[in-house]
Length: 168
Image 1 (tube, rainbow, N blue to C red):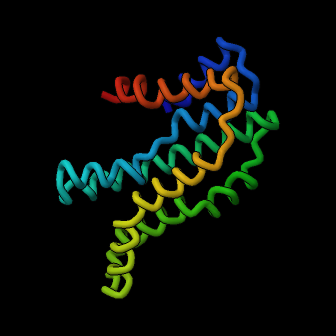
Image 2: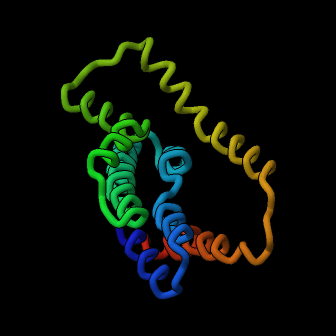
């Protein structure tokens, strides 16, 4: 939420165009804590920290996609269409996964081996597949004009330097 607030403040001070403001709003707050963070935690701290990391990630995703989507809708149209945003949220695979996980935990639903094993295999492959896909996307993208890179450098500095310092 503080990242959302900081982007709103910086966008207001710098008088950024609304389209760029909306892009920065989501990009500055959204991180790869699920795809990259969880494997890093497992590598450095062990599997015993994964439930905690998963819970933090679930809370993070719910905040990002609820508050973020409502703000984006408001900043785009000047009003919030709760039903439209709610339907979009309920169709989001990340939110569906969080809700499904919470239901399984609350009701202590045992999952059979035939479900667990493929999920473990998919889980182990997520980070490499994401990085491979990202490489294809970046490799096939145009680099654009150098003067358009200012916001990219600003966002990169925020996400890779300022945000970790604020978190720490």
